[in-house]
Image 1 (cartoon, rainbow, N blue to C red):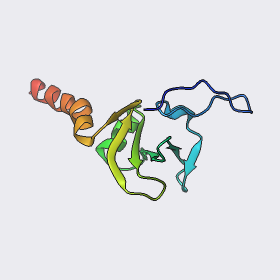
Image 2: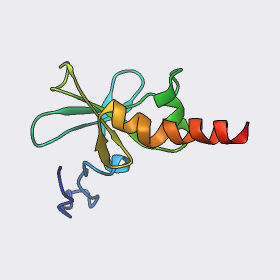
Image 3: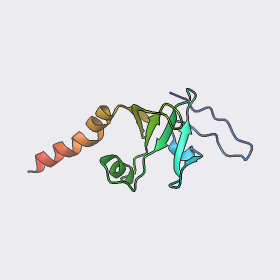
Length: 108
């Protein structure tokens, strides 16, 4: 993973940091979703919170969610970034969705 370099751009703002989506300056398509290209050339695209999916709901709840692709226009790699940490979908489901399901069963 890419570490924060602390570099400053000419306009005085910090450089985009991989683990902090709020610093991502790239925008993609008509939705203007944030995007980032890492040092390996992989393209990361922010989850569209307006979509109807569990991932969009996670984003609406305040989590920062992005999907990794081989490059712009490339294939999905099978990894995603949530709140600065890389997961496979299975790992993310176990971390963010299983707890909710367990809590629901405990309440019944």
